[in-house]
Length: 181
Image (cartoon, rainbow, N blue to C red; front, side, top):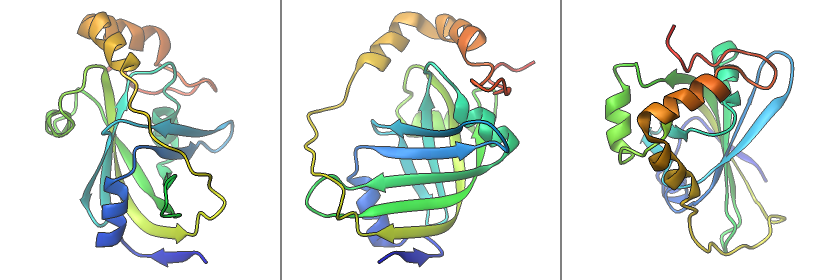
């Protein structure tokens, strides 16, 4: 049975801390709904009603475009080991770009990851748990280092060039504001 909470509990936070993957869902008023898987050490609970997650440079920047237009966001954690559980966070997010005053603090919190594109700070309005009994069992083999190696090889200037070429608009043509104009 699904259960709803007004904020994250200590048990929810402990569950989040041991997960290796989470999924982010966003949508604009029209167009595609985006669901993105995220891994690595890219999620932190600030307090029971506030979380922040790291967004590394990738081929698209859909989440940013959606949050600019519509701040609603759902984050889902799902256990793939013995404890079956699905945990969803519902709320509203804001973007934190490299040009923003809060960026250096978050960048430091996440270990100054190369290729960091932005952070999403989310106000959590509701938390839902459900059983997850139909979720299969999987075993983590390890984290991929491909994106980190790519970002290091590109360097800061190469990353900014990539943003200018590939990350300024979503696949539906919405602006992402990654480049300060």
